[in-house]
Image 1 (cartoon, protein in one colour):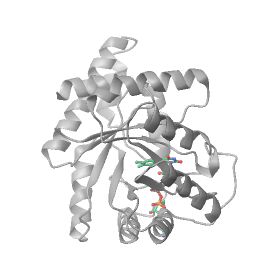
Image 2 (cartoon, helix red, strand yellow; image 1 turned 135 degrees about the vertical axis):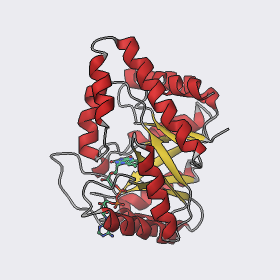
Image 3 (cartoon, helix red, strand yellow; image 1 turned 180 degrees about the vertical axis):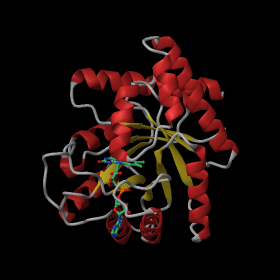
Length: 274
Ligand code: FAD
């Protein structure tokens, strides 16, 4: 069975908390290796992320893993969060640069994720298994794919143990990325990030911002289904399940699902993979 992990954002209201609890309960039977909680860059979810990690670890009994971004934060803030996560029993961490929310300014002490990985490894040695982000379709701010690969290599040299990718819908992007990375002598596991499709309009907007390509044929099929929500759901689940199957058959070591705190779209894919 392919190892799985699920990603959530930290809820801020009681209603969102109840939704997260329901989704966690539904996804837990799939025995994920861990469930991770995103962190708003610039400290916008400063207390919600640790709270949610604690809730996952305590009430739900799963390995709750924090994301930690460095942009906009001071070294001291990062140090105290690391201390807190250690105290909560965390042994994995997802280390990122992050993007400042629009309207917020401030550089912070660390500029890039490789500096965050360095800090974690310098101050905590092997305590945390450190995961970084990877971009099979190239990070949108990178000058070109080679520069981005070289920057990815910096994170690995700084001590990252593995990576999770930005989502993509074209398996070739992942396999070419793996080939390029291996040619550079990088041998850490690179886990594909999987984005189930639920709200296509929202996904298209988000994908433009984060540099993930949605192939034209997918958009055309979605459009052809019009308002037929059931047909859209079936098509989306079949499509992403096929992608997952291709990735696993081609050697992907695990699958990481961006759940957006909803269980159903991820479950529909996992049912097809079972
Ligand atoms: P970096 O690796 O620092 O790269 C950012 C850009 O700078 C790239 O273009 C890179 O080529 C370039 N670069 C890197 N290092 C250097 C260097 N030393 N010198 C010059 N240029 C450099 N965002 C959040 O805000 N919160 C989250 O919880 C979160 N979770 C995520 C989880 C995953 C699995 C992924 C894939 C992304 C996540 N993101 C999250 C989004 C992420 O923060 C953004 O994609 C961000 O723009 C880049 O973060 P990074 O860690 O990849 O940055």
